[in-house]
Image 1: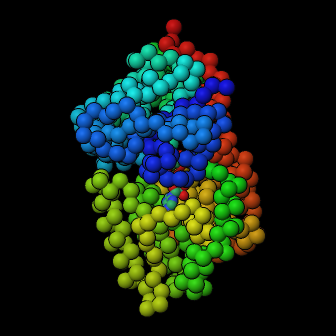
Image 2 (image 1 turned 30 degrees about the horizontal axis):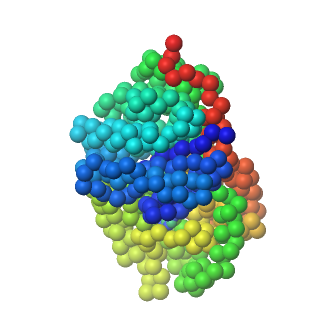
Image 3 (image 1 turned 90 degrees about the horizontal axis):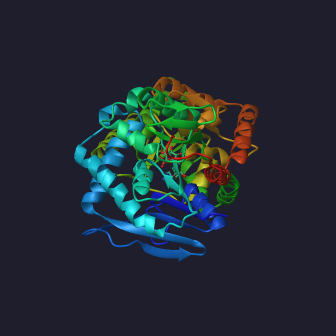
Length: 463
Ligand code: ADQ
């Protein structure tokens, strides 16, 4: 069996604390352990000058190879182009895009650096699987160095519609580089359709019904591979946590009130201010919930070096203050707002205790919190998921209360409906969602992508 090589910006290397020990990291690690493999990425460190050869660490049959970046490379590649250009673009926030040629040059430069450092570590029959928007051009950079391995790419975030994508300066270069991959994976059929319509309209290309694409003189396959979670483990974590000390303290602190929970990285794509406004609408339109429901929003700070993220934080602090000031009582704060991360087992217990999971991103590739919330529920008395139609997860979990997050009144009503939904209906909806989560896990996602990559039958250059 061919060795698997994974590339992502952050790795799960023993000393790299950047990657959360979340379901994705666990799933990829398992996939590497099955075949033996290599995980390549940024170490999380800044170096003074041109980075040295990768640092190699071993854990069982997995090797981790990481390199540091210079401050200039990190800023251009990660802070500016990846997170201030591509991230807002792919989340339909054209007004937030900052584009500069120097940032794009830095992005290409770091992709070339990754290729130069990775190429010597590759064996001829390795399968290479590259992750996410930091690395659209990495296959092209590897090909330029003569690497002939099969190379796959998975985009964790949405690929926007043609009209949005073409707002990006130099979009043709980015997308023709993407076509250097043998297999391009997306979260949903919508993303795949956006890819096809871009190639057809801008790349003079075609995409067949089986996903084979031809464009920019290149040929490969594309497909939708909706990511899942480690469902069985999450169920166990939640069952164990519900009687644990954290849930016990939470229960006591709520003093009989019901819990509505939101858990997100502090990111403008997650729609947290709109969610606050929706909760305010609930309290206005359905006053019977005043004093009886608490909304806890857990949102650890993310990308604090990007100005838009700092502005979001200020905005949210305003929302929490306004709602608590207006509706709060001496013994009840309607909103609890926490800028911190929790271990998975603690989160699992919080999810299980919450009557409502509020997952209302304005755009999201998939959203794993939605799936974790469902997996954590008590089968006898499950909570209700309120889910944005703009999360990829809504495609596989249509039995959630699916809402438009821009319509704060609709979301407020959905929270009310969730809080008052009869147990039978909650169980019926939950059973169907759970069947989906048991059938499509992080493990089956890894396996199906790697099997498709290994089975590939495309040439790289169209004849
Ligand atoms: P993210 O944008 O990071 O991922 P999401 O899919 O929700 O979003 O994954 C977040 C993960 O971090 C979850 O496993 C969650 O439990 C964990 N997490 C969030 N807040 C936490 C907290 N306070 N404490 C501890 N853990 C926390 C990107 C894309 C998504 C896509 C994933 C995977 O933006 O659309 O689903 O990749 O492909």
